[in-house]
Image (cartoon, rainbow, N blue to C red; front, side, top):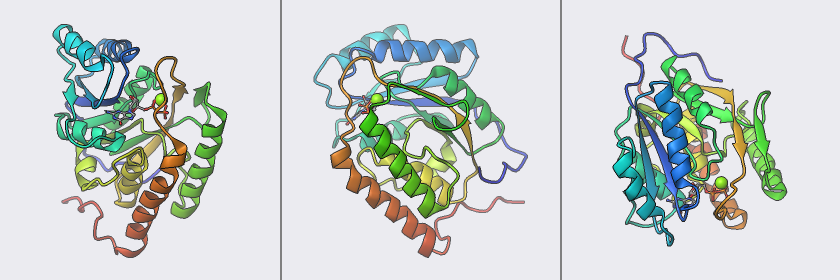
Amino acid sequence: MSNAPAAPFARPELLSVIIPARDEEGCIVSTVEGLHATLSARAIPHEIVVVDEGSRDQTWAVLSDLRTRLPALAPVQNLGQHGFGRAIIHGLDNSRGDAVIIFMADASDAPSDVVVYWEKLCEGWDCVFGSRFIKGGQTYDYPRVKLLMNRVFNFFIRVIFKLSLNDTTNAFKAYRRHVIDGCRPLIAPHFNLTVELPLKAIVRGYTWTVVPITWRNRRTGEAKLKIKEMGSRYFFICMYVWLEKSFSRGDYRKPARKP
Ligand SMILES: Nc1nc2c(ncn2[C@@H]2O[C@H](COP(=O)(O)OP(=O)(O)O)[C@@H](O)[C@H]2O)c(=O)[nH]1
Ligand SMILES: [Mg+2]
């Protein structure tokens, strides 16, 4: 955890939940409806920005239909180059909230954890990171090899960045908009964006806190993360941010608060 937020701070006014989706016709409707129901019940002002790109199934058609019934849904299509990171950047560029949460389409993240993230942002934190591997955190059905790779890579990140956070690689995290803007340009086109964002936010001096979260493996559709393809890309982006931390003399840190 970084230094606590300095008061006074403004509560965020609108939450944008960004959901990347490729070939998720089997689960996207229930994911969006479940999230919307939870956020509405807690009176959290929100929009849900689902970013479809390159889906070969009916994902875009079901989103277009759902939108007519659910005004908080703002689906967009990324017609440019594809990739998980590019989809999230497209969603960030096409959302309005002063707070953003990245959430998965396959219902692996819990809407109740989104509420906790929002409450922490309202306390004044710049970023809220979930961990599945601290007291109170849980995973269901995590594929064994993926879990092993995950723990090895997160350990590597902890060592080179001297971090207490032990679940950096999970995309499901919350940021105030000024953090996202302060981390630009975002350069990771694929799943490696999941580490570019939190590591840059930490290295650039934004405040962050950690809460326990629950994750469950998808029950429909196909997992898209291919560890073999991603290993060197994760390593690249880690070293990129590590070089910034070690040698840039703070040139990219967040601007100092005005007294
Ligand atoms: N728009 C878009 N979404 C993607 C892409 N790859 C994965 N996703 C979405 O990102 C989320 C995480 O992918 P998933 O397959 O569940 O990853 P895994 O569980 O780590 O294997 C899901 O919501 C996917 O639909 C992509 O290339 N473009
Ligand atoms: Mg998944």
